[in-house]
Image (spheres, rainbow, N blue to C red):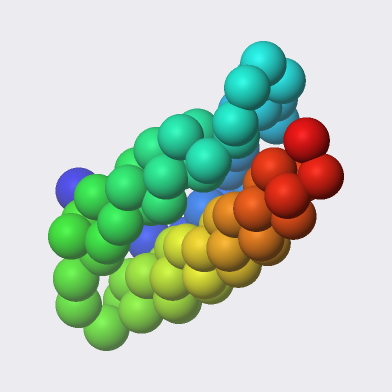
Length: 80
């Protein structure tokens, strides 16, 4: 059973702060998105709706970062 205290849940560090700096970061971003998506199935029921919403927000954040990274890599490849 999951701890239902949302305030405690918000404080949990669910990912490392470090992303590798060699090569494309897209792979690591995809891994983080998949990781968070795999967590969604754990949050069922009314008492965990806030938890699930927080996870969805993190997924959206990483999807936006990934899209920006893809654009940046495309632009950089045009000038190489």
